[in-house]
Image (cartoon, rainbow, N blue to C red; front, side, top):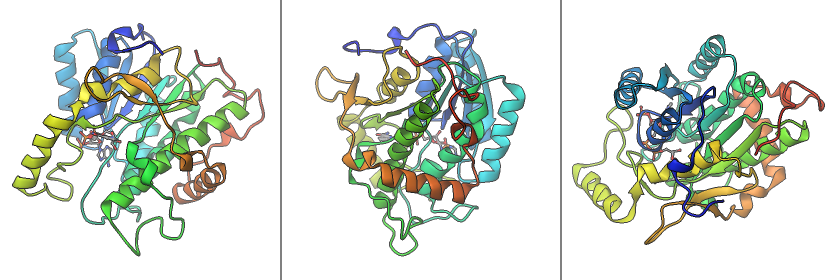
Length: 325
Ligand SMILES: NC(=O)c1ccc[n+]([C@@H]2O[C@H](COP(=O)([O-])OP(=O)(O)OC[C@H]3O[C@@H](n4cnc5c(N)ncnc54)[C@H](OP(=O)(O)O)[C@@H]3O)[C@@H](O)[C@H]2O)c1
């Protein structure tokens, strides 16, 4: 990887189509902005139609040449994920880049309309279903990439198959860590399955370090904002400790676009003075456990009904395409 890789190193993405989940705020917004600036057609996928359309207008004002659209995707609702995938495949001939970025952290235990714990579905299970449903679009493009966002907290995560939905004991940090470990287990398992069919589709993983976003301050529509004092404290700590969201977007931009990206590498961001650039990060050992990954995959197929049939076909399937980089 080039030292101090940044958005200026991105190539021209004309003709490529990209979907970014959670593009209405923070890191997702910055990823979308840079992909649009480099001439990809960008689909902003977020739950709030008004906010997502406003972001699309904002990017179009900054980049009048940008090719951009807003499409509602609520990862806390499997029906919404299915609608998104259907509309996407009707409107588009293929998908080159999918960034699984959307995420939540915090609050009391909440359940989605589908009956799953909120962190587990929004951060992980919803993305599992989304990739499965978009697989035909991904497989129809040579060298397509799925980039999944985890967190350094994944190293503290544990997949509790006996209480996946945290019904017995709930702590938001535990639910968040589990979902972020699940993101990594999924990213590596998806890549192994892609390689097994001999296809060129790749699954890559990233974490954004500590970035200044809305993640910990909540939204009115979620579990209610933290108390005013707590929110101010979070904001002050973010100014001192965190890098801007645009920096947090660099690992995903690198993995989504750079020819030297490697799916075995987990890309994070260098910290400290002179830091803020993509670097190879240590993969938490638990994320490399193939048995857990396969079990989680089977459970996730069952819970979501998503099928990855294209990846179970023999070599030479529709998903057999050009290798990455
Ligand atoms: N910031 C950090 O320091 C940090 C560290 C490690 C990992 N991460 C990860 O980075 C990713 C981006 O987070 P961020 O920091 O940029 O936070 P953010 O500013 O809060 O952005 C999160 C995005 O996810 C969207 N979202 C939330 N619930 C959704 C749902 N049900 N369906 C679809 N979209 C939904 C949000 O939409 P709304 O605008 O409607 O809320 C927003 O666009 C997350 O996966 C997070 O876990 C962040």
